[in-house]
Image 1 (cartoon, one colour):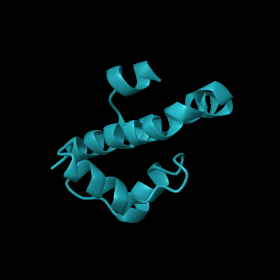
Image 2: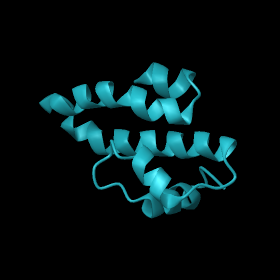
Image 3: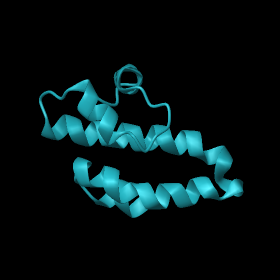
Image 4: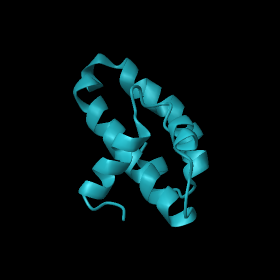
Length: 88
């Protein structure tokens, strides 16, 4: 996960590449306390990468990209990222 999040750039590929490692983390009961934070981190990294590539994007497209995060609301992800000054 670290390699994908920190050293790779490609927001569209990131979503597909991260699914399998993310599922492995979710499957381990010892990691459950980290899953919510990891989901927020992945969403923030994805939004940051998307911001540098796209001027605009449909919410439906963002929802599809973040489908690996259960109960992810694109609007909520964007608001949280802007509020925390991670994206502009």
